[in-house]
Length: 246
Image (cartoon, rainbow, N blue to C red):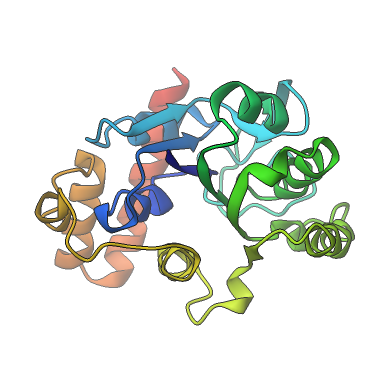
């Protein structure tokens, strides 16, 4: 089975890319610990998607998510957060090794996307230590530890261990489009086979899989001047996060 693991689901930026039928993913897991983001992710209309309401890590348990709901939310307190009002939330964590052993098999073809604001090193070190990383066909990892003073030193060590293990991985800096969904799309186009004519392609191109929130956001972005859209997006995002907390 071809599986996509989206670690750090946020609003489904990478999930939207993975749902393109050309990649042939049969099952897609989106790991997202923030309740506000989970609600949006559950709005995706595709039976292949399963939202996992937890963060992936090197241990199972609980943690504090600083900047919950924001693009840069992190379990590390010394990571700077953008925004006037930064809130926190207690979240669930799942150990990466235990989850992979329980939910995948050695026969699966697994693609892992990691964009989880510092937890990527926790996940990769855990899988390297246990050996379960051998189940992964390819990894896309954005080393956000570079933004966290207490964790930045870990990147070089983890990258070297991946190379020693001969594990295929890419970082945004190695791609022509070093950011966001464009980078994920480029990685997938390089990492595995694809079919230009796939079942469900028309439905995907029409955006019928997208949640109402994303439809509304795209419509507003097209209709409003950029400053007005940015202001409205920040306001509505903050309002939505507060509604989730109640």
